[in-house]
Length: 290
Ligand SMILES: Nc1ncnc2c1ncn2[C@@H]1O[C@H](COP(=O)(O)OP(=O)(O)O)[C@@H](O)[C@H]1O
Ligand SMILES: [Mg+2]
Image (cartoon, rainbow, N blue to C red; front, side, top):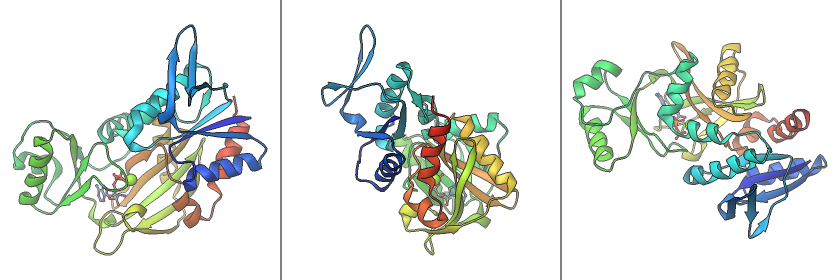
């Protein structure tokens, strides 16, 4: 098969692993920096890369960064319009990157999640407290990754300062109940196709509530319960994603979904789960090619 990997960084762990495994299994692989694509609509759809029209591949794998979601989605859509098989749909990419839209769509499928509130104009603190409960609250920017846009407000003063900052800069955010018992810990379930192929529990640095590996957290492999596995698969399905990293909190009320990552990194999950996740991806493509 001819496989294109859309990625800004050809030497990154995830991109080079995809290339290595696919080439090892006899496929032709081209890494395409989608920011250097031109999308032409004329008599037909054409993707030009560095000024040369690209051949139509069999499959496109997307590794689209958070700062170029729109461009990555446009390139994916063009390939989809050309009849190419995608593992990440442009719609799924866009929907999963908006944390509140993602929550709305997952709730429509009756998936469990922390209580979440989104508002646009100044509201009273007692209203937020009425909806979400007493602080601490989690406050999240709608479009952020690696834990960078996630804050813990311990009291009213801090929460109001954060709200005022985001409102004045027109940054959309959500407020969420803080799941205390899972502070500093979460589960990453890696979905490929119709199954969870690997999972890890991530643990934050001491004094840190965000368990993202990019925030200095570490991880170890963990067995998921049937319920967690089922939730992860259903969450990936909401967005039509055949490759997804699903973040889940283990709470007193049971598993709660945080988000679905549409270009999940491979380095942490391969290291800590000791599973060759990349091979699972290429094998899935081979079995469900066209
Ligand atoms: N409601 C919450 N209660 C407790 N911890 C949370 C909550 N929301 C997020 N966290 C912590 O913050 C981390 C980052 O949040 P997440 O929603 O996954 O955003 P990001 O896209 O930045 O990874 C999570 O992995 C988890 O450790
Ligand atoms: Mg996350």
